[in-house]
Every structure is written in C-alpha cells, then in structure tokens.
Length: 50
Image (cartoon, rainbow, N blue to C red):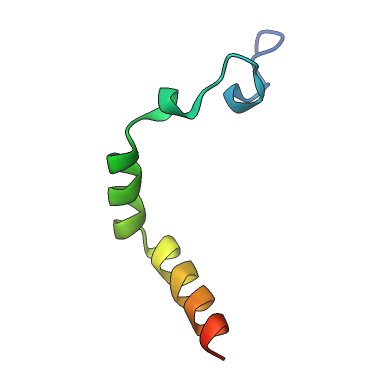
C-alpha cells in the first residue's frame, strides 16, 4: 500500500512550479515528435479552416 499523501499529484501542491518538470525545449521537442500531438494539431487546424 502507498504512503498517505503520495497519491496527490505534484502539480496540485503549493510548492509546485512547472520548471521542476524539465526544460521547455525538451517539451517542444517531445510535442514535435509525438504522433498524438501532431494529430491533435492537425485536427485543430482543420477545424479552424472549415
């Protein structure tokens, strides 16, 4: 069984800051390579154009 309080996501803690997750450059590189992110961006683009 897990310790009490460990199920709370880091992002909901007061001390959380997104910079703790990694660099913005790596996030952009990941999104550029992720198939799901590219598909979502394409769907949004198609919706805007119609």
